[in-house]
Length: 364
Image (tube, rainbow, N blue to C red):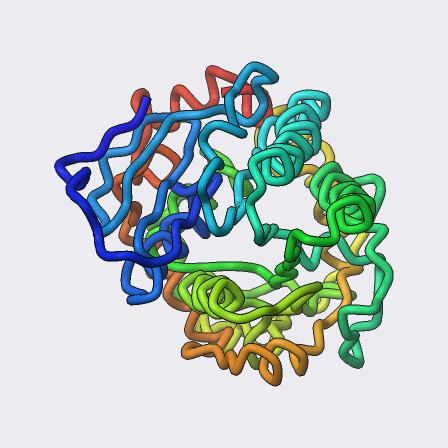
C-alpha cells in the first residue's frame, strides 16, 4: 500500500531514494534531510505501520522486512539508492524475534538491492558493532567489528557487518556505505527512547536537574553522542558522493559522568559496578525495564570513535555538540515530546499501564 498524500504529481528530475525504516528516530531525520536536498528528486519511505507524516517529495509504503513474502525487489526497482535504517530493538526477552527482523530482514533488503539493480546501499551499522575497545583513545574504522556477543543488539549489528563483507565481494558494482554512529538523540525521539530503554517506570517529567541529587559515576561510563539530524546530514552527503566503506560518526565532547553531571547541574558519586548491574539484571528479569543487562555491559565496553574519515572524505561536521544533543533529549523527556509517526508517538494507546500489562521487554 502506498499513500501519496497528494504528492503523486510529476517531480523534477533527480535521484530516487528508498529509505527503509523511515519513521523512527533516524528515519524521520533522514527523510527530511533528503527532501530538502535539490539533487534528490523523490523519496519513498518504507515502514511497518502506516505513516501520515507530510514531508516534501516523499511518499510512503507499508512493508515489513521481517516478512519473507514482502516484495522488496519490486519496491526497490528503479531506485538510485537504498538507505537501510530499519531496526527492531524490542522484545529483548525474545531474541529470535529481533533476529528474524534485524538480521534476516536486513539480508532480504541487501538481496533485493542486488536483484533490483540498485547502484548504492547505505546501511545503518553502529558503534555497537565494534568489539570492546579503549576509553582513553579513539579508534578508526579498522577496529574489529565483532560486537559484544552477549548483547543481541551488538550481536546482530556485527553479524550484518559480516553479511555485507560477503555482499560486497559478490556485488562489486553496488556502492556500499556503512554508517557507524555513536548514541543518537533528538527532542522528538525522547518518548520512544524512554519506552525502548528505560520502560514505563521512569517518570519522564523527573528528568530535570532539580530532582536529581547525584549521578552515579561508573567504571567505563564514557560514550559518544550526536544529534540525529547530524547523522542524517552524513547520509545525505554519502548519497551525493562516490563514497564507499565505513564511516564513524560522533560529536565532541565525550560524554562521561562529569559531563552528564554538568548538564544536569548535579554532582557525581563513585559507585561500584556490581550492585547496580545486579539491580538492572533483576529488574530486567522481572520485566520492569526493557534494556537488558547485557546491553548495559556492552555500553561500558564500547570504544571511542575517531571521525577523521567522515570529516575528510564527506566534509561532514556536526552542527551540534554531544552536550547539546543530550540536553535536547532530556528536555524532550520532560516535555513528553514526540512526532507524527507510530514509533515516535509521545503517548501510546493505553499508556504506561499497557506497557506494563503487555510485559516490558516482550513483544508489543
